[in-house]
Image (cartoon, rainbow, N blue to C red; front, side, top):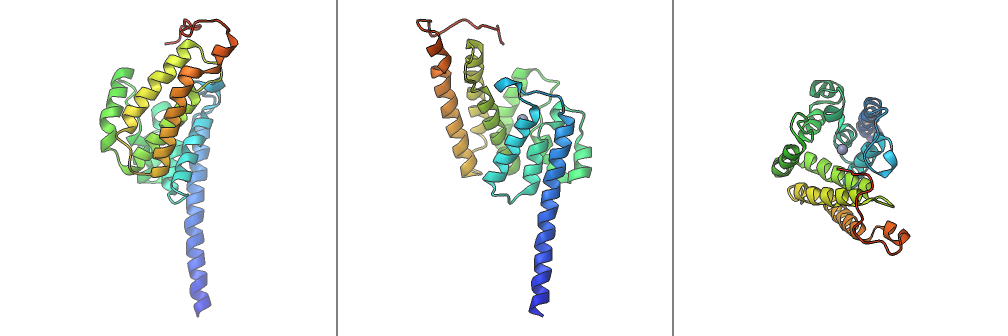
Length: 218
Ligand code: ZN
């Protein structure tokens, strides 16, 4: 009798695990297809999927794999903003919570960049706990992508500008997960240090610290 109960419990836990694995796997699959051919900013124009994998993985590590829906939302977090994917489609495929999390971290792309940034900062403290975690993971990944081995002045300026913006957004997201909070602070520190000590200076002996932008970026 005891054995039957044990089996039933094992089956139950297996089903939960498989459901979570399948949810995350299908989210990764859809994200890869929808963002196919897109490159991300910074770091050698790497495929956009690298950003999504990094965000999802940060969320999985931070929550010790306990929240499959959050990790699935991490994979999908830019689909509504950047691809022809709707909240309804996500809700049908992944359930209402995943869809709601993605929408919570989606900018209104009809607004100019300044307004979108302002909204992110103002709205951050009012987001759900899951959306706050996605925001932090997203900002960590975006800062890391801007830490380039030989940045131009424009790229250094972009790094400084983005770190300052990310700090304002994440100020409204702290206190949910200690690991993500710590990783964000370490990433900000690395970004700020890199912005003033990027190695390209040593390759240009005698060059002034503030070189003009080589590419006119921004
Ligand atoms: Zn993102």
